[in-house]
Amino acid sequence: MVDLVHINFSVLLVGCGHMGSALARSWIQNNFKNISILTPDAIPEDIQAHGLIHFISPEQIQEDFDVIVLAVKPQILDQVCQSLSSVTTKTTLILSIAAGKTLSTLESNFKNSQPIIRAMPNLPASIGEGMTVCVANTHCSEISINHAKALTESIGHVEWIKDETLMNAVTAVSGSGPAYLFLLVEAMTRAGIECGLSEKLSSKLAEQTVIGSTQLLQKNQNILSATDLRKSVASKGGTTESAVHSLTDKDAIFELFSKAIHCAQKRGKELES
Image (cartoon, rainbow, N blue to C red):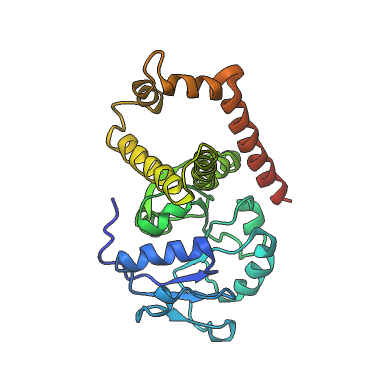
């Protein structure tokens, strides 16, 4: 584990949308002292009010940063990279969280032998419960890897892979994953209203059920699987078994999620071009 308390290397965060803001909040909470932000986005008030964050314009980039974190939309990534190439040195780590943009695409926009890491975090990073997967190019030194570990371990759990082709699947499962859970809450809330509950009560029931269930899953990690926990709720002949059967009949819910995740993976591949 990287020591997250005494982090002195300089970081330029480019982009402060939903994901960029999530990263910034966790770094602030983990005492990163040397963070600058360059963004066309409206900066959230809680980040803007933090005295140790530097907010700069493109014209103000006059120093060499140890790490540049690219948190911009894939559609404008090439343009952003080209505008930053002049302020990098051969040791500047480029850490990109842009979905679908490959290491080779990133390398084409920077100097030869530029250390580059692709990372795919997700939104729970904003509360230190993110899931991030990283893949590095061949030019990353131990220092580059350690910088990336410090930045990603401060926002939650991290896994490293060597096969970059898996990144689109990672994006589809965990990068996009929080949206699936939020959609589940929406669906449960709507169904509760249809069954006669008030919107307020139905929303409360759905939200707290998902919150409590995910915490239960976390506390039983490495002991009980999601399948085990699901079976423990579904008593034979009971209401839950009836509901679950309607979802799993002919693998309905599994087919639905398989379709969704394959769609996200396919879109990631399209963004590579």
